[in-house]
Image (cartoon, rainbow, N blue to C red; front, side):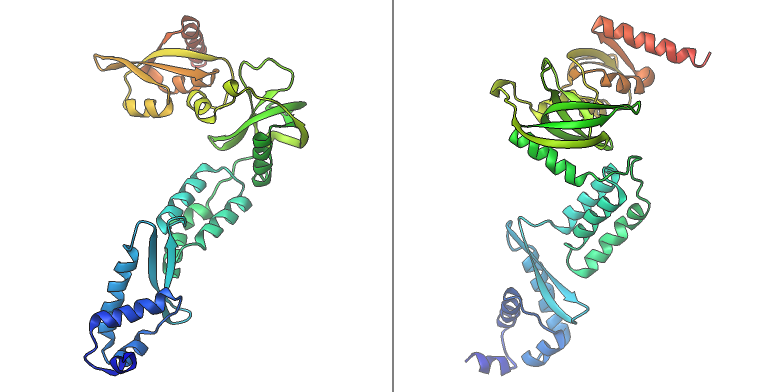
Length: 330
């Protein structure tokens, strides 16, 4: 019966589309002119069927979306299966943009990742479009000055964090001197161009962790010696991230300041622990809990639109710094 229907000029449109869908679902392919001849219709009719199938596969369910595309090399139509655990072209574009803007890796490592992501985009026309969209950024990518490979060490350090292994490192300080340390690694983080190892120095009091730029680790060795972390004192990446600015360590403190700049929203985004205590006369009084002195750089960047209120000693420190800055222009 099926064979007779295929030869029948009056074949229902629904049956024709279902047969086309069956071919695609079974990882087959078809040529438009062949189908037109087989089903005794013109190529415009087949094209309308293809458009229907494109829409159908793209909206099939939340867990599956298919892309019906024309393979120029093989000159036929195919179906690319996209399940909910696969990256879409939209998501790949967003990832590429974030990676390139971060300047986190050297040119070779960055290009390797970007090119692998590009190859995951179907059909080829969309892959070419992606390459065009990010092409200029990729061509003019500016790696940071250290230019070291990081991908391998990031995995190894993260493994040491998970297994709670002590690590021995030779670390190059900002002044160029090299020191040796035995560390208890508790986290690996990224901020403002650089990856950081968050770790406690073995044998030292653990009020707060130290912060090491990964690219400045000259030599490293993961030992098989474990260190213990009490459950109630374990390191929480998210909570630490909320309170650290510019990856500068130090004691935790609560600051209070007035802000009357252009974007209060940007302040709240920059300081996740920030809380607006009061708004009056166009000024907001904000409280935030932070680690260390890195916050000082950000506060100064707000120019004349911010005033530190508490703690008193930090307010005085800000005043002294501003006076020293003023002296540079006198």
